[in-house]
Image (cartoon, rainbow, N blue to C red; front, top):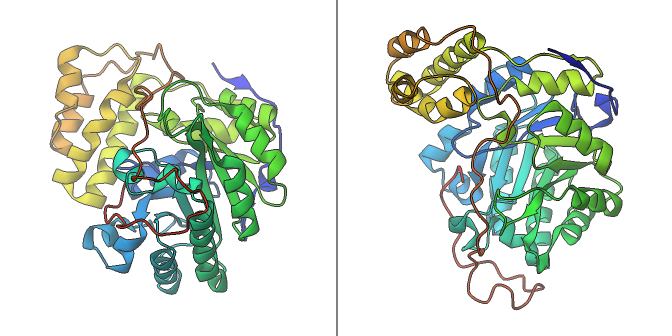
Length: 383
């Protein structure tokens, strides 16, 4: 059954540079997930003027023209604005990468990643580790903004609360990004040590909104339903929401968010018959993007998310998780009960795990004003 929402803000309140983001919803970049096929699927359910960000791209890999990375910078003909997330630890490579992106017209918006908690990123001083080094953080943001500014490409910055409970960095990061010309900041309201465990601390988003006053502040963390998005805006005053794990196996969440933020009835969750159609559509989009063999294999990881909460037998679930061709996909989807309804339409999904000590370069915490660039910048795009 649909439910009626009350719009808390007009969607056009959120602008990222020249772009009105309507409604104020952003698809978070997720490694191995937010390729052109998944972004198109989310866009088909949501608004074409929301933001749908591609997988994380490494600055050094762009500068060195890494073939896999250059292939990842793929956008559909209808995607606008084209949003690309850039990761780096070196102001020089960040500047050069941004110049390539804008000079070759590869994106309309650059989002900078300072929130990744993955050990292979933080151990090199990147992701959520980097804002602790305030001077280096400032230099990197400044480099990207200045490189993109002449072409009118807005730069935004995403980060976490901090490294752990003893090393919060989000207020300084927000103020620095604002000072250096970022067009918006987004906070995933967890520390790197939390990874994706526990609950996001939305009070930190409210504190950031109080500290950063001249540019939009977006909130991220634990948005698994349209109600969650409205609650976050109401409780924090944030200017928009960033959705990650909540849309895994639920690309129609963007339609629900659009309705909720416009004060319209929110559609009821689809039954299994409709979900089967969506899975088939996703598979064909992936096949068109990656080729049938690679594309259908890429779809496998989405199956458990799509089928979460539905009464589907173990054998059929196993077969769908091992599907290899579109013909096999169609056959297996045809065996699902189209009238079945989910028992878990809005629950948490995706990785959660447990808190863990953040892996950092040796001596990383010694001096937050040290602006030295870490020894090696990662070449691996996608997170």
